[in-house]
Image 1 (cartoon, rainbow, N blue to C red):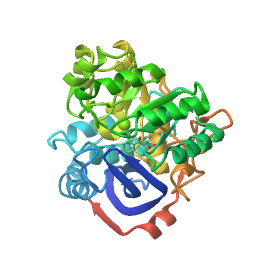
Image 2 (spheres, rainbow, N blue to C red; image 1 turned 90 degrees about the horizontal axis):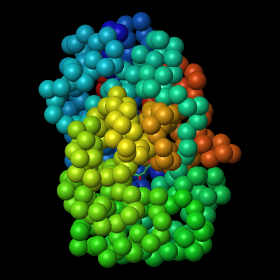
Image 3 (cartoon, helix red, strand yellow; image 1 turned 135 degrees about the vertical axis):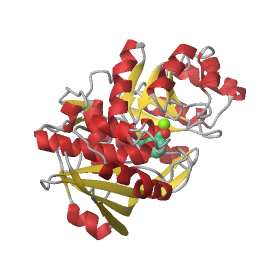
Length: 370
Ligand code: OSB
Ligand code: MG
């Protein structure tokens, strides 16, 4: 693969509705897309999911753009690259910036898959034909509004519901959902909003048979999660705390988690995500694929990873119309009547990138060439 050019697009995409978590509210997402082109003219696409501010992670879209332009893309253009696996070594001097690295690595995986005429799932170890789709629902101003969104998503066919919680919006919403919908597969995600002082709340939540509680405590505190896990029976799932395979092993040794939410953008790439998926069952840990409100491009990689046999819980991979009026791929990602998403068998992403829409929506575009 001789990369001759890299294009970077920046657009702002409006969400269909507000998405609120314990760290803030989102109405529109900054979307950075990376397109790589090799000497024969074939292309590959990847997505950078960093947010406006350093809330979920320290990485913000504008700093990531800078790191791409000054360091990551120049390193790629001056290096020989045979396979996507070479990329991590090429950029190993750059500490951190997993989201920026993921976007470029995804583009290389897509390109490589197109050249070989195989779907990206083949390169990521996936072998299922469809993946189980769950949905993540934000914090709402009232319980009634939450219940009506849960009803809508259950009717649409999503196989499990995840709700965001924060102090003051936790036990009541869970009780209300259980009362209204009975024993549907339900889990909660605190995005690190609690501490060990909240043990009484966790004991109450524990009575509701939740599938799991995601990232209850601080993003950088494996030890606190290990203490909590000894006091409750609901499985702990870690998201923010697991930034690498090493974190997973340390978390496992400490007994901090039973399940891992795998997001390529958090662990530095789709290949690292695959390695974590391969390790999870060996450590006796459950695994599923999380999301960062991706467009259809990033979503293609989530679907491919979720087709890996190690995934044994429903994923945060909803259809395109959960967030977008119009997606930037064709066909958009759709939910089947079984509450699944089909894994494409076409080469590369398996969906067509709508370059005209992207060009039209872009606020900024720049290119770097050899
Ligand atoms: O914690 O899983 C999270 C979205 C943005 C940042 C963090 C998280 C989320 C989600 C949404 O829960 C998942 C999705 O539908 O893409
Ligand atoms: Mg999470």
